[in-house]
Structures are given as structure tokens and as C-alpha cells.
Image (tube, rainbow over the protein chains, first blue to last red):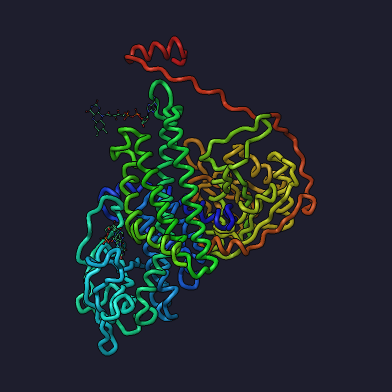
Length: 381
Length: 249
Ligand SMILES: Cc1cc2nc3c(=O)[nH]c(=O)nc-3n(C[C@H](O)[C@H](O)[C@H](O)COP(=O)(O)OP(=O)(O)OC[C@H]3O[C@@H](n4cnc5c(N)ncnc54)[C@H](O)[C@@H]3O)c2cc1C
Ligand SMILES: Cc1cc2nc3c(=O)[nH]c(=O)nc-3n(C[C@H](O)[C@H](O)[C@H](O)COP(=O)(O)OP(=O)(O)OC[C@H]3O[C@@H](n4cnc5c(N)ncnc54)[C@H](O)[C@@H]3O)c2cc1C
């Protein structure tokens, strides 16, 4: 793995950084306050290739590698974590499984409009009784002639409110438990598909988190993704890639908070001098920078393994997400501290970063789950 | 229409530059370099013209091998090909740069040259004018609107207190001001395509150019630190200070 960005990666970073600062940053505070995402960003990002960074151009994507995807999610998250997860959930959790497991027809029909940003995608895995225990999914899919009929409820679905298409994990054979799960491509305009509720959240408030209800929801037979019984495997492999996205989001949140803390520490005068002169502040900044670099390197390693075609990088993706989410929590907490009382009020953005950081320890597998994945790999032999 | 757009590699203008200890230049270690922002307006204008009525845009960057990165960034904005003029460590001021650009012009015979109105690092604002003079071409600087007609360009330019509309015969030299257009962001597929576009590496000698320095930079120094401001208790005190201390009233 190369520590330095090559010419293409540098250009991707510069473009994403500029787009984030010029187009996203001015909207971030308002989107957070009103808990609404500005959908025109999806269109703009689609035109730039950001809605499918690692999807080949022939399927509407940006044709880059996962390292570039990580860079784009980091840059967006450094100004707005909601925008970061809108892109990450869409790309990793919806585009990626269709790209990897879909038929040519499925890719043409669904991946092209998704990766080019004409519509948003989501993954429906979690249910009220199936959170960490994702294998306990109860939503069912039954074949009726030429159609699958879905029944059940999915909760906490990122992009659920606006998605044009959902990858849904449902049981086609209850007796086989998690081996009886299958994956489906469900268009939002399918009969019986309903967005039941939007959640009100602590952080990433601009990103939709919705409940999806399927009541005799009918989709064509050919919308099965992969083989029957492959649903759990597809979900787990999808989450491996997704964790690289969330790790990148966490790195971005942490970096954004650190950059603001540095700028503030140089400006803010107490005791007749900038607070950056105090060692107590300097050491906070030094720890933040060190941990952020370490988190980014873990994230890039996992991305590199995915790009190299390693069959299994679950352990490395879990390490990246576990560590980066922890770094995001620490860095944002300390950034608020550097701002003192001003860090606690919404006139400055660091309080938003602090609220946004927490989710990175929860979704796409809680930190406990990441430790389970890592320790399982350690103890396997 | 064939359009030539010179592009300059400049330190990221949002980052504070640091001088080398001996004052011979700026510290480049760890500095992020970008396409000169005014040049992006020039590229955008040129690309829009060719997107509308066909033709090609070629870029010219003068400097060292590192300028290839700058050129790739410009190619990702839609230019078709590029020249990299490697000075082999030499440095030229505006007139020497104009000598080299004139040599490229003579090889390519473009219909139009569009440059940024100035470079954001040295702020010289003279390469374009010198280039026009050396080639005996018409110039229209600080353009905020460019319209092409048969064999000529109608350029609206911002001048103090108003607008000037100028008609220049092609080929001509135009420089871009900020309000000329809104440069696009490089899309990821465009960045990929830029990787495969031609960057022709040449030296001034290959071009038959003999750039000369007529001016020499003797040294650079930091601006003197600003004195701290003062707080005044009343308007009267302020006026008193403006009159008696600052002597500006
Ligand atoms: C904002 C948001 C967005 C989300 N987006 C999506 C989405 O797009 N798609 C989707 O399908 N889901 C999504 N989720 C769901 C998310 O992945 C789950 O919330 C997460 O997996 C945890 O499940 P749970 O909430 O049911 O918690 P639980 O599983 O009930 O866990 C509660 C606690 O118990 C711990 N725990 C559980 N089991 C074990 C164990 N065996 N050993 C040790 N500790 C354990 C957990 O780590 C956690 O700390 C989202 C959630 C949120 C909040
Ligand atoms: C919700 C809220 C309620 C409040 N209620 C009250 C109230 O009722 N009455 C009241 O009077 N005030 C109140 N405050 C003000 C509060 O006490 C101050 O915000 C706090 O003392 C910190 O001061 P500051 O915000 O100016 O931060 P600063 O003093 O600017 O500190 C910024 C950072 O620099 C650090 N720092 C500063 N100096 C040094 C040093 N010499 N060495 C090392 N580190 C240093 C600080 O620890 C902090 O991390 C309130 C604030 C908030 C946010």
C-alpha cells in the first residue's frame, strides 16, 4: 500500500474537498437544524461521480477505487457527517451489493440510475427484533407465480425516506434461520411498499432514518439478488465494505472537528495570549492528529485490501470502523473542550460534530460487534 | 476553433506561505499546489466554446515535472491535450514566460489564447499583455463576457466605474476575470480521462524559444507584522486620534 496519494487520488481529494467546502458546508448547519437533506446535493454529486465512486463508469459510477471512495466520504464528512452517510449508505449498502451480486439486467435497470445519482438507494436489514442479531430477520418473501410477495417491517433505514430502491433482506425459508435469508431489489414504487415513519435523532439529523413497511409488497421474480439463501452472506459482505465507508465518515468527522479546534485555539485569547500557547491545548491537538492519522491508515488498509481483491477483509474493516469511531468520539469531545463554553452552543459547528460522532459506534455493527468479528478471526485457528 | 490556455501552478492560496530562510523563494515542502484560480476561468471559457462550436483546447504549463499534476487537473476540467515546458530548474519572469508562450503559439497557431488575468502568487498581471505584444496580436484583458463572431471576438471588460466593450480580431489574447463564468468541478470520470490525455514534454530549446530575463527577483521578505489595534471610549476620542495620531483626517 502506498502512503502517498497518486495524481488521480490527489485530484479526487482536491475536487471532493472543494465541493464539500463550497457546496455542502454552507448548508450543513441548516440541514441539521431542520433535519432535512437537500436533495439537489444528490443530483450535483451524481454528476461528479460521487454517488458511485467505486462503481465502473459503464454502470454510471465514477470508475475509481475504494481508496478514492474513502477519500470522498472523508471529505464530505469533514464538513457534514449527514452528507457523508447519505453517500456511504447509498454507495456501500445499495450500489455495491447490486454491482457485486446483481445480474447484468439488474445492473442496467437499477445500478445505472443509482450510481449516477438519479435516485437514492438504501439497505433494509435491521428489524425491531433483528438488530445486532441480523440473522433473526422476520420479514418474509414468498414466491407467488412470477412475483415475490414481501411482508414485514424494517427500521432505522438510512436514506429510507427518499430512496428510489431498497436492497431488502428477507426470509425465504424460516426453518433454515439465517441460511434461509435472501436479498431482493425492491423499487420504492412497488405496490405495498410504505415509508411508515421518520426517526428524530441526536446526530446525523439531516440524513433520513426511516421505517419501511412491506404489506403484500409485490416485486418481479427476477428481483431476487443473488441466489435464494444467500441473503445473510450478501448482507455480511456488504457490511464489510460499508464499514470502510463508516470508518471514513468517522475520520472525516474527527478531522473536521480538529481543524476547527486548531483554528479556534490560534484565535481565542485568554490570559493575554492565544490558548494554543497552553500545553494543555497543544497536547489535545497532538493526540487528535495522531489518532486521526492512525484511523485513516487502518481505513485505507481495509480499502486497499478490497481493491486488491482479498476475499476476506472482515477483520481489517472491523478494526478500521472500531478504531475510527472511537477516534471520532474522542476528537469531537476534545474539540468541544478546546472551544470551552462556545463549543457547547450551536453558534459554532463543533457541537454538531460531537452529536454526529456517536452514530459511528452504532450503525453497520456496534463497536461490540466489531470486537466480535476481530476476536473471532483471532481465535479461529 | 483551436484555443490555447496557459496554466500556472500556484501554492494553494488558502494556505499561508512561508519564506525560505534565505529569502530566495517560498518553502514548498508539504505545500499543496493547485491550478491558478484565474486560469480555471480561462479553461472553463475555452472548454465551453469548444463544447458549443467544436474545436480543441490545449494547455501550456511552464515549470518542472511537477507541473504535470497541474496539467492533469486542467485536463480534468475538459481541455484536450497539453504541453509541459520543462525549464530544467531555470526561472523566468513574465517576459521570459511570454517568450516561451509565443514559441508555443507559433508552433500551434491557435485562433485564440485565453489566460487568467493574473497569477495569485506573484500578482504580476503582465504575461498576457507581453505575449500579445510579442506576437503583435490584439488583446482584451479582464474579460467578463466573451462572444465569438466571424473572425473576431467581442469582449466585455470591467474597468473602473463601468464596462468597456471591445472587438478584437482573431487570433487574439484574452484574459479571464472572476465574473467570466463559474468553473465546473472535475467529475471523477473526467479525472480518469485526463490520465490518458496527451501531455507533450518539451524544453524551451525544443520550441526554438530563447527566453530572456529582463528583471531579476533579488529577495522576498515577510510583510511587517501589523500593530495591534486600539480600543477607544468615544467617537470624540476616535476623531482626536485620527486627526492627531494617525494624521489621516
Ligand atoms: C441512525 C441509524 C441509521 C441506521 N441505518 C441503517 C440502515 O441503513 N440499514 C439497516 O439495516 N440498519 C440501519 N441501522 C440499524 C443499526 O445497524 C442497528 O441499530 C445496530 O445494528 C444495532 O442494533 P439495535 O439497535 O437493534 O441494538 P441491539 O442489537 O439491541 O444492541 C443493543 C446493545 O447490545 C449490544 N449487543 C447486542 N448483542 C450483543 C452480543 N452478542 N454481545 C455483546 N453485545 C451485544 C450492542 O452492541 C448494543 O450495545 C441504523 C441505525 C441508526 C440508529
Ligand atoms: C451552558 C453554559 C452555562 C453557563 N453558565 C454560566 C453562568 O451561569 N455564569 C457564568 O458566569 N458563566 C457561565 N458559563 C460560562 C462558563 O463558565 C465558561 O464557558 C467556562 O468558564 C469556560 O470559559 P470560556 O467558554 O470562555 O472558554 P475559554 O476560557 O476560552 O477556554 C477555552 C479552552 O482553553 C482552555 N484554557 C483556557 N485557559 C487555559 C490555561 N491557562 N491553561 C490551560 N488551558 C486553558 C480551557 O480549559 C478550554 O479548554 C456557562 C457556559 C455554558 C456553555
